[in-house]
Image (cartoon, rainbow, N blue to C red; front, side, top):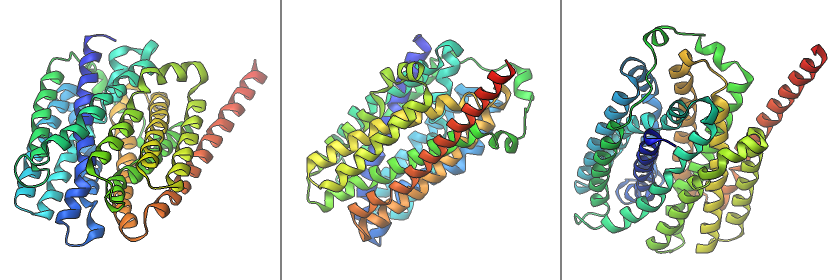
Length: 394
């Protein structure tokens, strides 16, 4: 860890403060303003849709202006969109709130590249640890985000309008941190070289498994996480307990980052991903066994740890799937699949929790987990066949 990585870790914490606050309040604000109950999570979906639509634009800004300038633009958008969210709440305008969250997606698309940037700042010999440590910066957001939502919910009279104002301040603080980082921008000859076509990169088994595991693990996590505040509200649990559940969920997402890199180096990336799947299954089993505060707390914590194992491992594995000059389009493609899946899960969570209930939501999460398992088996078989052929040649 050097100065640049510490600053990037702090910026990751501010990014997660934004995301966690959105998670804690967007569904509740949407439920209060939406013309129909099943549209409650539309602001959550808008954030992800905006992220998906921004992936190509972000890839271009990263390529032409570099990491720092692109990240700074993202934070300006974050601050302005947060202010627009506050205005929408004060005006009780549901559709303006959705527009604001779509615009905020540009920041999300930028900040999701922090994890790849960590590997560049650390160098090849420590890329696993750098990725996991920067992701661990999300612990800041785990603690700050839910408490920020709780403490500022009544600032301006309208529920949670003050929380959006506070997020604009968070964006300013993150902007200062990003401005102090010395990024390792690529030489001019690398930015001109396009490398292989994206279709060729995406046909690689390694890329396919990275995209499947990253997008589906994120989608399942978002499906359950976005529905949790609404599920707890329907179970008549107080918002203070919802804050605690979300806080420990996000701690589970990012605290393992302090050692996930070591686990990957010791056991291998595929084994860590398998453990992540098992943790998801444990989460679903506990969620189906009851709807008390304790059930929500333990299930969401396990969901967070499982996500960390799968997402950190997928990111580490993805670094092997492209060349330096292919960085922007390959990372943009992976993030696009992540955002697309997360957008579908965000809308589905609102529809399912308000029409079918918490139990069916959890049962439905098993199918995408089965796809991840099949992808891991396929890649493991491919790698074993490759090693067998090399040993024969040797």
